[in-house]
Length: 612
Image 1 (cartoon, one colour):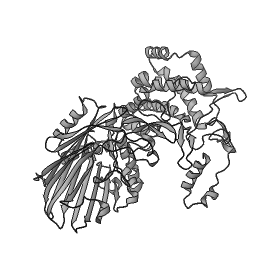
Image 2: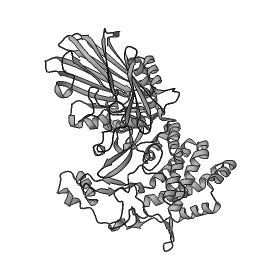
Image 3: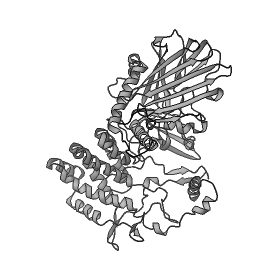
């Protein structure tokens, strides 16, 4: 493995660029497959450029919103209480804020080898006092219920008393995505705020529909070197916010080390009597920042020994980008995810985009995970298997057979895609037909088969995977129609992986016919499902055939469809994206290029105008 001190293991910013902060907060998210926290600064609250969101894997809540004359129901990934708040001020002075001080030096580094986010700033306040602040934090990879912050604060030209405020903020709402801000984002109700011993604070909340409870406890201590500094504590207990204010003497050139160790437990956890009891107990028993850092880094070292991909001929930038993607993948789906009833969200657990829903993105990461963490891949596949009854119901509601998995899935596997969207440009309600992306079903079947091939897990295939494959194959067979003129089977009314083509010009109904990707994958699923029965032992095969009532006639039809599926072509043997693709008009690239310097937003605006 390469030297972890090299630049190909670190994302480094050496300037404070406020306009880049939302992007940087997302890129500097820290997580462990259970909890994730965006890279916001400890001293800021959500608002403007900052959004220090905290997310629980699979932590959803469903709310209704009355908007523009319609009642919308959405299930969202919840923004949970913010455990980051930590700030200081000279006694009687202003609280530290990058926007109000004279910034002398700035550096942020995300160390992806060790899973640590560090920020170093040097600044001068309005009263000419100069300070150096080094902040380091991690979300513990070995024990998913732990997180920690360390501040090293040095007064460079001043001595006196300073005040440090350490808090947990439960008044947060879902406001991360601008176009969702009109929707109801008040997901949390406060259950309890209080204190644990002399140096810890506790906050418990519960979602107001799904009734998931989370308790956070935070222990704050101040050291000079390794010795606890004499500290006066003042308790603050507002509704929804709990804090300690710590008064301590600060001497010129002397570094104060502030430790904030946080424990997080939920009602979804194993081996927990009750989240608040667990969080209180854990915060009392938690080790120091340095000891926690050691075990955290050890776990990351073990993960990288399995996961690292070293480029033999790549430059440092390319090498880092590859590792950066692996880093965020492991923060979303890690060994801590195993046995948790969660899927793979399209944007990770890094924010509220796509409402944290599960699409088909596991298709792209399973080739990486299955070879390195097969038990994790199996756990993620079980998310789909547990929602098989809901997929069967969705198929029935659309007059199909088998199992039809939704394009967007959340807590229970129902279709979370909206049927209508409010166009922010025109103010009109427009149909959203994205749920017609039926290829998610083929992706799930493909993932099941690929996992079996890699792991040779016949137990999974026998008791879970085969049933998924057979029911998805049954869905494709029921969706296929026979064209006697062509003597081929066809699939109509779908949207392929290219989401921009959703219907034919002037068509009264959404969907396209014979999307090449969809038809090819459907044919493959039918062949694969027919073959999988032969891999099972006779007893299990008999049970499964009886359970889902598969007949020999049905299997023969599957075979016939798979061998006679229509695939559209045009030109010199070129596969068409879908039937009729070659008749579409070419996009007016030159015309739109003259309207703006960057054609990309123009293309987006053009697409919006088509539906306005």
